[in-house]
Image (tube, rainbow, N blue to C red; front, side, top):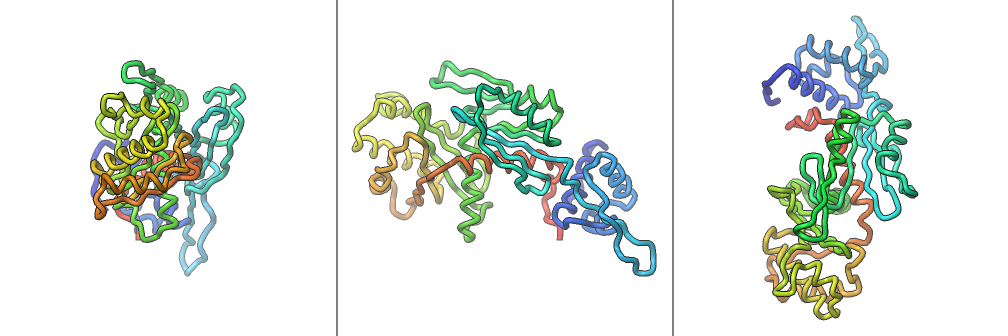
Amino acid sequence: MNKLSGNPKIMKEVNSGLIKQVLKEKTTATRAEIVKYTGISTTTVRTLIEELIIDKEIVSVGYDDSSGGRRAERYALNLRNRFSLSFYMDDRNINYATYNQLGDIVEKKSIKAEGKSIYEFIEDMFKVYKIKAIGIGVSGVVNKGNFFSGRNLNNWSKSNVGEYLSEKYNIPVILENDLNAIALGFSMNYIKEMKEVDINSLNLAYINFTKIGVGAGIIANGKLVRGENNFAGELGFIPIGTEGHLIKVLNNNPDDKSYVKIIAQVIATVNCIINPAFIVVGGDSLRRNLIEDIKEECKTYVPNNINPKIIMSEDSSDDYLDGIAYLTNEAMNSGIKLIKNEIK
């Protein structure tokens, strides 16, 4: 266990997180077991357990059988007291999921927006759940609770939705670029199917083609790549010869032959920069009927020994929501994520 130092408030949050981590991994535990697994003193564990019970973050689930002495009380996370809310909006729908502290899905739905603002939607969700963290997927560049979006380099609008919600509800609010969330969610779901792939060494790019932009979520050695100004992956602004930026060239509706060449060059460019094992392509404007031609054309630009596996995404909606939910649950359990060693 790493020794941490700092002000009392930080140490209290870290120690509380360690206790909740034990209860998350072990389901239930006694005080003695918590002391053993965390290395926190008996006195501190007793004090923090009392506070966590008062705050309704943990509950008593009864006593162990007596072995001759005083029976030990056993504790568990209060799964009815802490929920995360993750969502994103498309043209017509609000797609959302709520999770408990263990990361289990409580509810997952897509509902008609019908003119409802995200603020009204969130208020409605607070009436049903005790929400302790919110995650929102956005199309744009995220920066410290704000995000910026636009179709050209000189006319971007700013939204402070993250800052506003965090201040209003006094809880963590995570904004994440849509492609970063999709790349993360795809990686998690793909690894469940391909057990030989290790998330910690994963190198992947998820390229999404839409009428309003071309973007990529990038994972290098198991970590999301955001860049200095969170601009990494904004492929729509790649210059293509003298014709302008990539999104402009694609919106000019090139013929199939030209389209195949352009997309193959984009894939080759991404491959040269980050050398991913997988490049996933998707989006509502991708010409899916040309995917095999694109793969063949890529061989023109990429040496055989470093050719990534190209995968076509059929539907990114679940990946999108799963990626946001993962980041939101991390924020809800912020004390837990400070742990570097798994509890044995």
